[in-house]
Image (cartoon, rainbow, N blue to C red; front, side, top):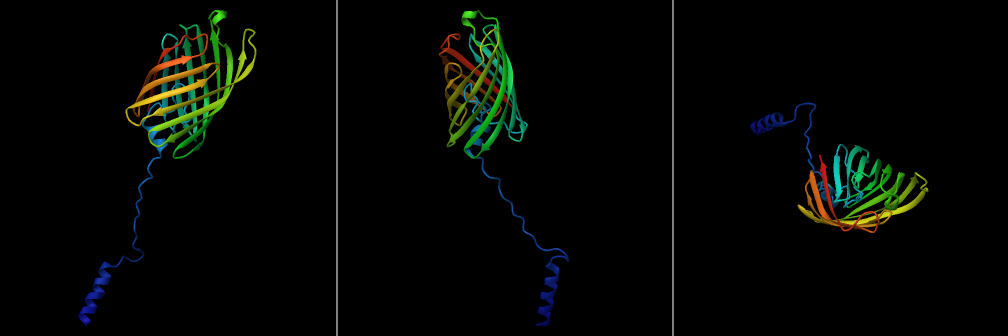
Length: 248
């Protein structure tokens, strides 16, 4: 019996924790799975826009987005956006249209005010200045304009991203053009979760606009090719629309 007690005692000492130390159990938990909105956003380098309008998704900290949008025979717009942290995105863009006879440059500040597994809400304020050498009969707006609005993105499952937006544009015209304030709005859908996705978008910015396109989407490069139409008098429609977005 004593021998057994001695063996038990020695065993207890041999396998006991050293003085001052207690046994601990490490609990490892897996990170939560990304929501439907994040899945669609991270798999598409062009997720910050639907077709030509913003989608309501704000770039994450350190992300840089370079986007070129071209309407064949009409003109092109080049933009750069940067996620600077705290849900804030800064962007600059420049437009060259009608063979260099109409130009604008400006930028905006976008703030994400709410984001969930399926939704994102952002507000933005922007300022642009436009100049033109077109004839008076076909003259679009010239001068400066201030925009203030918001966008809402919602993921219906993991294959359909819808976006809606509205706001105000205040035009401060030059050469005798009056100062006016008008509404703008847009709604769009991006369908698909793989390499090929479909786009449909309608909007109003001084005149109605619609775009239907196909997108080749990857995490770092996305390209759109489609057809656009507008009710304006200056731009001839229908027109071929091409867009390219590159993101780090």
